[in-house]
Image 1 (tube, rainbow, N blue to C red):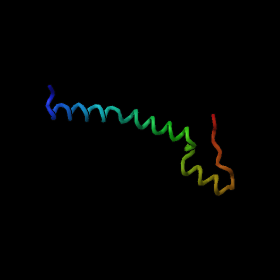
Image 2: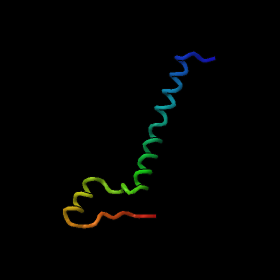
Image 3: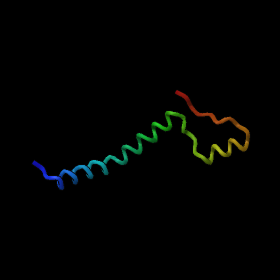
Image 4: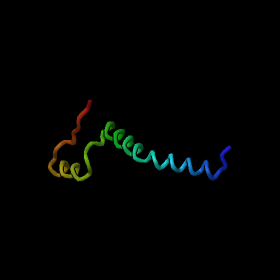
Length: 57
């Protein structure tokens, strides 16, 4: 049986190894739910009086 030190090491390795995948998931989820434009682009559109539109699948 593994001791707590080994288990902690395995947990931290798995957690750090998944950070890139989690970031990709969060970005894709935000995009799907309407966050497709960055803040700078939104501000430019607002100044121009243009609607903020994005692709809807």
